[in-house]
Length: 275
Figure 1 (cartoon, rainbow, N blue to C red):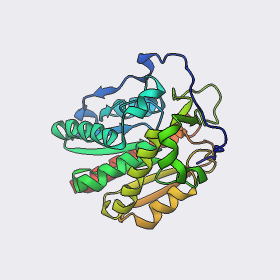
Figure 2 (figure 1 turned 30 degrees about the vertical axis):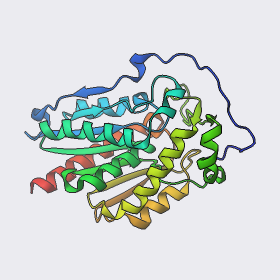
Figure 3 (figure 1 turned 90 degrees about the vertical axis):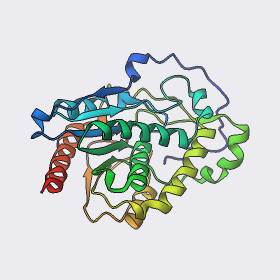
Figure 4 (figure 1 turned 45 degrees about the horizontal axis):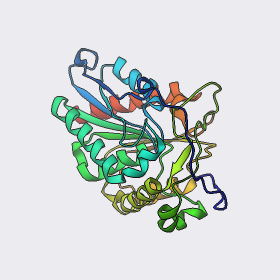
């Protein structure tokens, strides 16, 4: 991730209230008449300090194709940044698990797609649920960081509530992911511990994986890609580079490509499993 100097701790700020309508979760039933008679569910997961606003166009595209969609608002998000320091990685994992269970109860197959930390949560689900999950699509997944101050998180998170954050790392003008302006440190520390556990468990991920990453990303660095390549067990693995988007590629110039190619991936994997 982009380095924020340790010498500039963020000690507090009041951001403008977030409109709940902009960050609302989404739940849409399947339309099997559009998907060859099968009920296909897709779990859509946003990133750290972000919101469903960064994923809504993708979720709406999936729903228009006939897929059931569950897009939760992760705990601590979409309200005030201080709320994130009251929740942990396990809360986010639990939310994703619950959304998966709802989809699995009503559909024949379920996929998970995620941006940044949402991608790591999708991979956590794949590691835990195995082939109950049909496949995973991740965009600029976050699994690790080269930030030098990350090693200080165990201590810093006790005394400093937040650091300046990076939001709207988007090349396309006029787009807004509706994210917090800061990085809450207790939450960041919990996420870092969750990442470490996930990296150890990546060999458990055997389902098909489609991985999109931006050629220029000011948030997620190369360490995440290295971790994914080093440990993933999936034999069906595809990596595709996004040349015209930054970190929040799901609402950037390459978004239509992500939507189309992820749908092709879902259709291909679903067809193979039927066969």
